[in-house]
Image 1 (cartoon, helix red, strand yellow):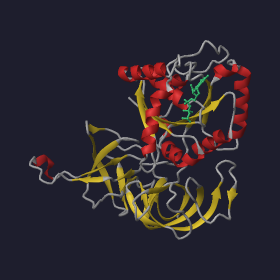
Image 2 (cartoon, helix red, strand yellow):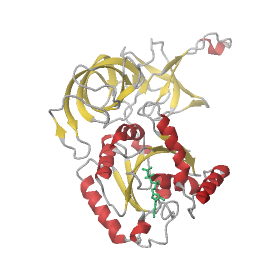
Image 3 (cartoon, helix red, strand yellow):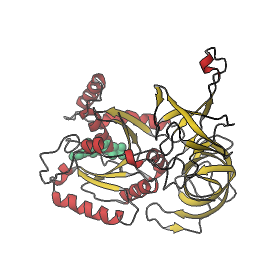
Image 4 (cartoon, rainbow, N blue to C red):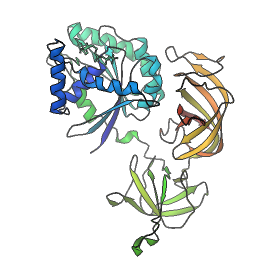
Length: 420
Ligand SMILES: Nc1nc2c(ncn2[C@@H]2O[C@H](COP(=O)(O)OP(=O)(O)OP(=O)(O)O)[C@@H](O)[C@H]2O)c(=O)[nH]1
């Protein structure tokens, strides 16, 4: 069964917690006892409806305890799909959380309060979604019950947002009028909005086509582990040598000719093993172990690709970076550790070209540094070649994180725009 990862964003009180609670509740993912506790608390608080935001409030406590860049993840499933929700708070001070949550998302839901319409925050969320190349975007126009389920109001918001999105390189865009509180158009189509003939939110999440969002053209296999059973008593395993990792692009099949980077040596795929036995093909995001026909000296951080389609071996990177710490700033001459796929190197910031105002998209070329939650365009030099693609072409081989050399904290996330 396939998995849809999605991120939710909204401004304070747009109803994000209520919506997530509703999805979990209506898809029957809530354990009975958890539900009972919510009902009890709602009763105690004197609210006559079951306050679903209480279900996700537990996440908030988790969030506040704080790991480095904490995003609360939630899981639920329907017979059609499994879902992983990255619940990211909407305020600008959480830009880094949204970047983290959206970087692996197939889809993002931006919540809009029907009474308030498109706010600065909605535009910022849309911009970040676009920057991170989340392929599908849903504008959930919430609290429709408070605007009398007005089609006119919904259309107004749709038009305003569409005109803004046309200025961005916006992905596949879907508008759904909902009431998270009452459940209108969340799981099933609402009778309160007969004028709406699109899908309910859950139906959309279950059916949105994501298989072709992944790059299936450029074979990229970053080696994560070399597997050599040390004291194999089974003679069949004695010579076993496999390369484990997650497919980051393309389709691999036994018999395919492949090239190892950095050596440039070529060989063929002997077999593709998985936890459940050998397979005839592997594609993203499968985790597999490749066996090759020839013995090549391969280690973690190396890349396997096809002879005629290779990533760039680059030491000079142009990238958009989101800075994620308030302990330091990013500026020219900042030294960092860079982690790109399975390879780690050292990086030096050569230049900060501009800082981007994520609300207005204004580029400040006079900026001297990037602070917490700020995004800008930088040039980096790395100490050893990384095998990269542009982020626009492949989010896995085009993205990287920056780590503080002293504290080992994640301090930045980057998207490669150009490499040399
Ligand atoms: N009438 C109405 N109220 C709603 C709807 N969705 C949410 N609310 C209410 O709006 C308030 C805020 O909802 P939350 O779900 O807590 O909002 P949130 O976006 O998660 O808020 P933060 O997490 O604080 O940013 C609560 O009182 C909800 O009951 C809706 O569709 N209709």
